[in-house]
Length: 317
Image (tube, rainbow, N blue to C red; front, side, top):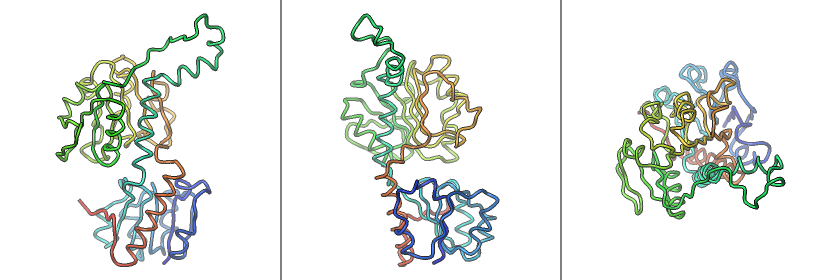
């Protein structure tokens, strides 16, 4: 097979085993691919593997041999799924590989917010503890999570893992999901009830036409006064200007996000200097163990396709 990888740098920093792919065919690895170069680079490809490279109907039309697109990601909004279906191109994603890492990062962000880790570390680095007249200079208000309510928007594998951690910490768990479910210790509620009752709101739903800008000014207005907001899902689910305003006004007590509307971050991103806002650069999925699992799953998907029983296939809506 003639295999082209268009954005290998987004998956590996030289620490993944490329032979897992080269064993399956003739592979060309490109670190990154600008939109203007996509057509020329995949013109003869039978298999395309990518993470965030936009693959439009026009791109597919220029690659007549292309039969398979494998994603180094769970999300697939960069692929025109309808166009792929019309051309008989199989598209497979890598669902579930990052569940534990993203759940871990969700709580890393929440704990940093609730225990004021960044503020206290900065205070110590400045020498304020050295000059303190008390042994515990607790100048930044902290929050004990035990007994508090966390509201999860979305209850896929990551949402379920976050719920398990929350329950282990003694939190109450609410959840809003489009698919009715039952789970021990979790109460499923409307979006409005979740917002009004949650001390922490955490986003774990996919980006769709229905969820884009789901968290807008009205949603934040409905939140509990002083609530914390976490987003490790997709940036466009949130109206960043509305989130910034909710932080500036004090409606929200803090926010922590791993994803933004524009990535890499735009220079004029309204959250960049927002008060009590922690931002990490879309790295929740990035531990080596997690990326190794991702590569193996992408290989397994491609191998299953070549053997005639494709798995993790994305179908047109």
